[in-house]
Length: 496
Image 1 (cartoon, rainbow, N blue to C red):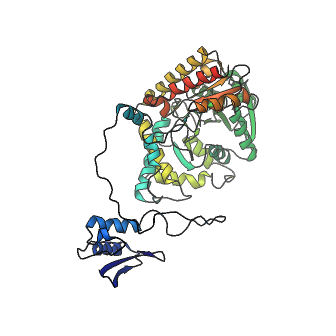
Image 2: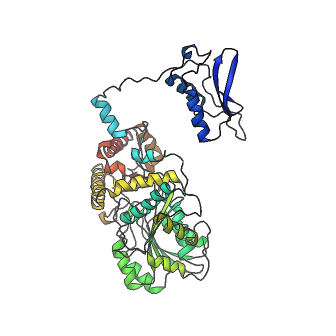
Image 3: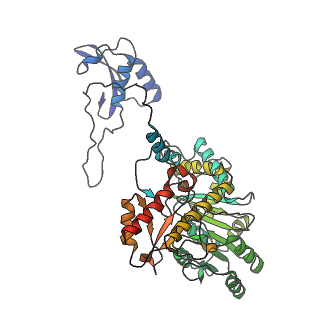
């Protein structure tokens, strides 16, 4: 029985007398003794459980387990609520669990299971992040609670950091991965707080909304951000970048690999080569929040100094993790600072030894990570690295080509009109004259698909964004892309 918040185990040998065996069991060994007592063959149970008069082992175990069911003994205690947990009373008759074998699923049920598995039915999320998640990744999020310094978790975290090296294609031991609780936006703070100092100049290449935000982040830290802008749907051209680098010395150059607001893809390899040739002391920083996992990034070969990203897009893990890969040159730039880092939580000083220790399978602590998110990231990285990265990138290119061809066949146009500027993990689509995103998107939702509205402040109501990355591309059996294209065509027909 449970009384006053304590577990008490009784042996009933006489209708008029209860023999208390154990009270307030606090230790594992005491619980073991209690269970042994519970399974002694002389134990009897009295009313209100007449069916258990001579208790079998299964019956006795059931009676104990019902006292230990998940519902808490105490009510939920919130500042503005007197809610109580509802639960079954303890005097209900025991109902044994059915042991009949599961029925054989029909072909239709098997097909549905292969598409959505254990996920509840829901509209297919096809925005440029968060994206749909694989069942195994979601199951990893339900991992039991675990100490962030326990050997099993440290091993998982260490393996996760090592797999990130494979994803970013770096074998240089001086490269350093970081995985920190936060959104991709935290990556901006980490770059600004650690690699630039007050009064430094940085060049921000502008292809949409997120360049404005990155520049604003730099200004918050007292760093002078100069934006080199391109027309909507285009990117700054290399001769323009070269001219800017020759006119002024910049500590950093930042580029958004894929701007989520416009779907514009920037060329990283040629850009990095240009920077190293014209201004070799300038660090190359890539905002890869909407590209890592769907666009190829050769960290070592292209001479990149920082790639920052987040977990919830093409990597395919629920939101909540900021991920960085930094070159040895970037780490040396940090170590040679004249002033302390201008952030506490985002400081490399605090995080660098933690990441190095975790990858070396040594427990370490600065701030508590999320074990469940790390397990989910470990699962998706295991899936990603199980195949050649070239296979993954080819699948995203093929899906993108198919989607963009269909969009063109519907008479629609992309914000990124030039093929070389078009991302492989998303498509930003201008709507026909007279159709607006606030009108179309609810109709698409009724058809079971979620697209995103426009984000670029100048044209927000005139276009929609279609995210096609991660499991929706890699697992064709799901049918996500087919469903989305059908919904888009039907939605436009409904709109006239």
